Image (cartoon, rainbow, N blue to C red; front, top):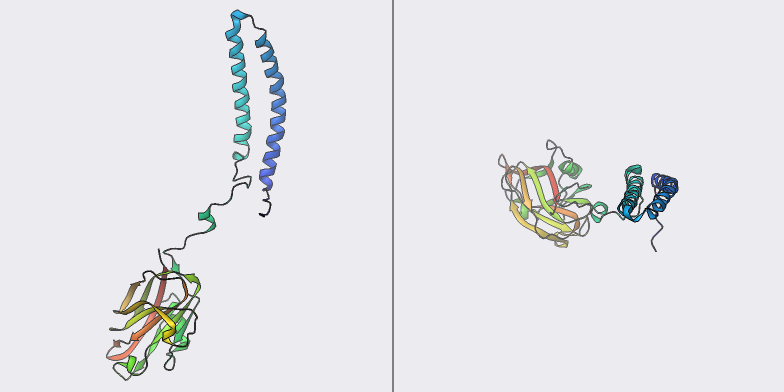
Length: 247
């Protein structure tokens, strides 16, 4: 059963005030209208029209007073003020669609080798593009998958979210990333994650990747499957990753 709803003190006060005022005005008007009706009932036939006019005026006065009491006291005592109406569904459940989603944690995911700069992973989600998560510099011109299958950042979200887009700001040319989802923040292998967007080649600067038909997830993996180059070296700095929920 639903718990009994408590009325605000202001609503109770205005309700009591309206009742008291209504009772007083009603008593006064009762005598006045009674007198008028009595007078009207004894008006001679030739003055019948005047009697009916008096009755109509009395009723109009009564309606006006009652309207003033219940319409003006406290700005009107509607159901919302008395706490009788349930909150609308839109107010109770705000829609976050299209809004930025701030990860609560970023960790390096490197299942086939040593993690690249794990201490700097949070810098990719700190909102400051001047700080970066630096992927290691590799001597192999094609380190992924020659040296290992890749490296990425696992982003933990505050709640399951249907992802709409991912924006990645980096400084390399030719780097390709996949957007993946994971049931846990620390999967055993890449095969334990699900591809949301296949490999997309990025350019230096901010790149926005659209995510279509994603299912809600609490863990988003930005997976670098191909490492690009900076000044002829196999490396890349990821300055910032931002997420938005699906519309």
